[in-house]
Length: 194
Image 1 (spheres, rainbow, N blue to C red):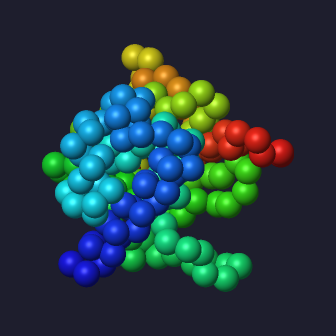
Image 2: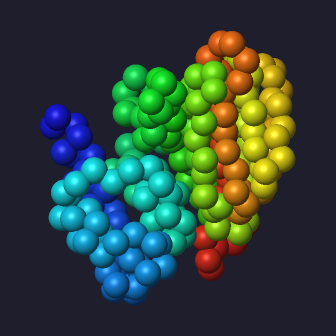
């Protein structure tokens, strides 16, 4: 419980700081991110429980990664993160889950995710900002990746990559749990040099 409260306080601080840096009012951020002003006010007061889709919309609107909204200050040059130490940012009704493991630093950060998809369960994702590229590597089981309505089957040992600025859905397929590692390559921040 204390860890959840601390994470919510960090998220509140990071959202407020990013909104202020961007020169956005609560009304303007609400409009751009399509998140209610009441939810934003609660979030900046470290109240409520924002869902994964809300975090993605806020991060995209603010030009940040989801983990940049969630992480406190970095400690040292090497970070080692175990999946058990991180709460899932999405859980499905059948036991599927997505955990944001870490985000690399630099002008074009990369998010590293660990996903588990149960057969038949899916996560529909809204399009990300232009320039986002996603890569999924299936380590066991199989999944169906749906891009703009077209199904692509990805088996254990296979990797798929696609532009994330279109409708996409991840679905567990086959008879066993699908485990995959996803990377989300974010475009360089405005004004950065690569």
